[in-house]
Every structure is written in structure tokens, then in C-alpha cells.
Amino acid sequence: MTEKILAQVTSIGRYLPDYVLTNKELEKLVETNDEWITSRTGIKERRILKDPDKATSFMAAEAAKEILKNRGIDGSEIDAIIVATVTPDYFFPAVACLVQREIGATNAFGYDISAACSGFVFALSTGAQMIESGRYKKVLVIGADKMSSIIDYTDRTTCILFGDGAAGVLLEPTTDGNGIVDFIQHCDGSGADYLIMHGGGSKNPSSYKTIDDKLHYITQDGKSVFKRATEGMADVSAEIMKKNNLTADDVAWLVPHQANLRIIDATARRMGIGTDKVMINIERYGNTTAATIPLCLYDWKNQLSKGDNLVLAAFGGGFTWGALYMKWGM
Ligand code: UT7
Image (cartoon, rainbow, N blue to C red; front, side, top):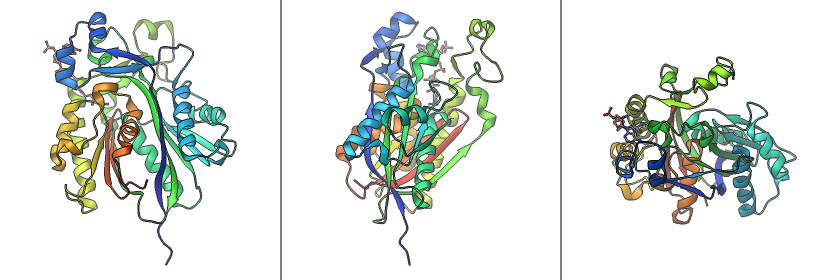
């Protein structure tokens, strides 16, 4: 009997812009205050990519370079690049192609995945299946978003939430049992209008009117999204535990999407795990959309041990949501 091939994380990297946008600075832009933002979201500050010449592919490529460096390999060894993003540099070419060029991944193909805040989980499951098939040996999976490029900094209901950043992992095959074991993924387009950027696509192509109407910014019905996100992330996390016979004690870490501390707490409660086993860095980076989960993995990498059971969970625009169970392999 041949042993099952799993996809294992063998390296990790990130890029965060230097500029720190604090709650105090936001108080000068919109009618808000540190107390409201902290108590309603858990966010204290976020990073912003200020350089107008730099976009999402710059951050994704920087993360990719660190991934290669930490693994001690050259870009030419990469087979595939998957970038999860909703803020690509252009509609096309894909950010993955720009990363491919920047890191000299001369033997790779690549594409982007648009699944908003669930993007990294969906991209990771896609990369894992490429490895499990036996067809590919080294797949880069990156979550990257320059959210500041689609935020209206006069809208206090959204501008306090988001930040810029990128992070990702290298997936390689293993037969030692540690790797991506299972995932559950959903979407529900009936939620499309609750979290959306209306302009710039084929429905509302860019025009003076779309700019005047502010259609190139995120709009969100926060309350509706909050309700669905709280249910969705908690349900799918509990579901993946049940499916894999995991008790709360078996789970070493919950790695949740960082949209709101109250959504994270609700998910942990449903799973029956204490906050000491939940990766939380929302206070420093805010919601970086596709980058939140790999940024958590990066921050906690020195506290992870081989064989640790991790549950990744996300909910986002679409609606999209999902959970992924992996046994840490490094
Ligand atoms: O990652 C993708 C998925 N996205 C999410 O998961 C986000 C989900 N939603 C949320 O996290 C929350 O709904 C928000 C943080 C966006 C908002 O928190 P909330 O507790 O749902 O507040 P709310 O929208 O019910 O607003 C309560 C009050 C309102 O005032 P009134 O109508 O009660 O007078 C808002 O106008 O707070 C007001 N408000 C603010 N006040 C100060 C809204 N934004 C702000 C603000 N500062 N920035």
C-alpha cells in the first residue's frame, strides 16, 4: 500500500509595511475614538503601504522572497504560485504572475484566488490538492491585500477595520502524517450585497460617475456581516473538529481570520477552547483580508511544534467561509 501524500508547510514568510495607522490618527480623520474601536473590534493599529508606486504584488513578492530564503531554495524550484487577494495590482495579469517575475520562478505557473477574507484558506486547500495529487512538489500559497487602496477614509464604519500586509507558506509533499488533513468550504452568494465593492468591474466600469458615487470603495452592512460571520466561523470550526474526532484538548491552536475580536471569541467558545490557544494579532494589524491567517502563523511559528493540531477558520465577503485542519510539520 502506498502511503498517503499530504501537503506540509515547510517555510513561511511575510511583509508588513512600516507605516502604523493608529486609532488616535483615525480620530483626526473621522468621528470615532480609540475606546469605541478597541471595544467593538479589538483593533489598536494597522499597517499601511504608503508608497503610491507599490501595490499588492510588491508585498506578496517580499513575502515570497522570505519564504524562499528561509527554505534555502531558488525561485526556479517553485512549481506553482497561488495568491489570494481582492486588491490585485490589476484585473489582469494576476498578482501571481507579477510575483513569478519578481522572484524568478521560471518554472512556475500561477493564478489568483478571489475569495475575500476566506481567500487564504481556499488557496491553501487548492495548493494542498496540487501536492496530494503527486503532480507538483513545491507550491507557494500567499495571502496579500492592500486594503488601503479600496477604503474610503471618510467612512468611519469601514476605515477603522482594515490594514495592508502579505504572508504565505511553501507547501511540499510528505508521507509522515503531518500536513493538511482536511478542509470544509462554503459560499453563499445571497450575502453578496452585504460586503462589496461595486465599482470598477464589468457591472459598473470605471467612469466619472462611479468615482463621484464612491463605488470604488468597500461598502459593508456591518451588523449583518457580523451576525453571519459569528455563526459561520463557529459552525464550520465545530464541524471540522467533529468530522476529524478532535476534542478541544486535541486542538493546539485556533488560527482565525482577524476581522473582529468578538467573532474570534465566539468561535473559540463554540470549539470549547480557551483564549490561550487562539492566535490573535488583530490589535496590531487590523483586518488584512487574505493575509490575516498566514500573518498569525508567522507570528506564532516559534511556538509551534511538529504534530500540533491547528484549525484555521475564516469568513468573508461573498459570503465565503471555511475551516482547514492541519498537523504542523516543521
Ligand atoms: O472580514 C470580513 C468580514 N467582516 C466582518 O466580519 C466585519 C463584521 N462586522 C463587525 O465587525 C461590526 O459590525 C463592526 C465593527 C463593523 C461594527 O460594530 P457594531 O457593534 O456592529 O456597531 P454598529 O454597526 O451596530 O454601530 C453601532 C453604533 C452606530 O451608531 P448608532 O446608530 O447606534 O447611533 C454607528 O453609527 O456605532 C456607530 N459607529 C461608530 N462609532 C464610532 C460605527 N462606526 C463607528 C466608529 N466610531 N468607527
